[in-house]
Image (cartoon, rainbow, N blue to C red; front, side, top):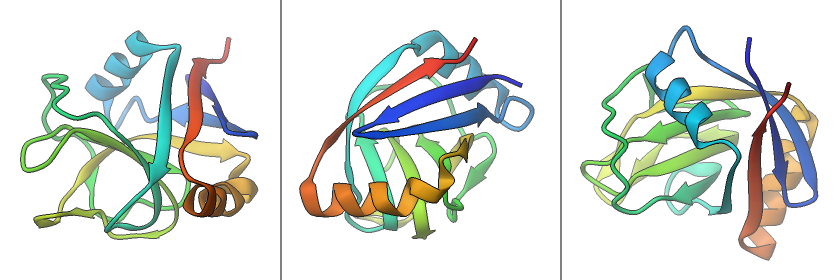
Length: 138
């Protein structure tokens, strides 16, 4: 099992890659590490935060796709009808965009620190964008 440390604002999380269910996306993500971005609150999906990636094309399709990620699950929307993005559910989510419901690929799940997800999501909602850093735990 491959573990990833996530530093999101003032919060720390430990997550695991879903390598059996989403091997291609996990391999791609590992090659991006360490990965640093800004995360903002979603517009349409509910209790979630996202990292907009614009026209980034990772050359991936759908793998382990869901429209209803559970709290602590990250999904990658590979682009198509809307921009490429990473989404983190911190509460109830129905993944959607301008054109309605869509699915993203669940590839990463937070284990340690889940009890801080609501506080993190609420902080992003009310205070705006936060830095986020993903690093592989050795």
